[in-house]
Amino acid sequence: MVPAVFLDRDDTLIANSTLPDHAFRGGRRGDLADPEFVTLLPGVASACARLRAGGYALVVVTNQGVVARGGATLAEVEATNARLESLLPDPQRTGQSLLDRVYSCPYHPNGSVREFAVEHPWRKPCPGMLLAAEAELGLDLARSWLVGDAGRDIEAGRRAGLDEARLLRVGPGQPWSGLPAAVDHILGHD
Ligand SMILES: [Mg+2]
Image (cartoon, rainbow, N blue to C red):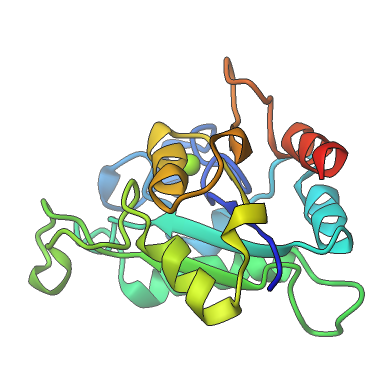
């Protein structure tokens, strides 16, 4: 079993809150579902490479309620995630990404698209995406970490049973400025 670092997508790996209004779908800021606007935050590529070299599986867990709200299709979200994967190529594995898997949750209970307008165990702060990854990728959750910018990210890690000390919140005013600082902490700890 390998340890993982669970990574939030928006404002953890890629820019979101700093993007212009026209980057977002359905007029709702935050709903990024256009590959053209996928931009890695500073230091993210090297931070991910360092984690992989350190023996961690990298697993993205992202809420994408934009699908339930009708602002984008599932295919557009998947294309956006594929763009992220392509921006993080693994130099050791030709044609593969540093990211082992990207889980995204298209559900939201207040959505307008009936198929997706339900609460779902994958939607953070629920831990479903982390638990699915544990089973599918053979992860050791006791040695795993989570990095995210939102309280619901941290709560999802907590509900998955991760060690409280391995839940790292990043961003302005948070304990870690961003993913590079969080990775310094992870690699210095284990
Ligand atoms: Mg986020």
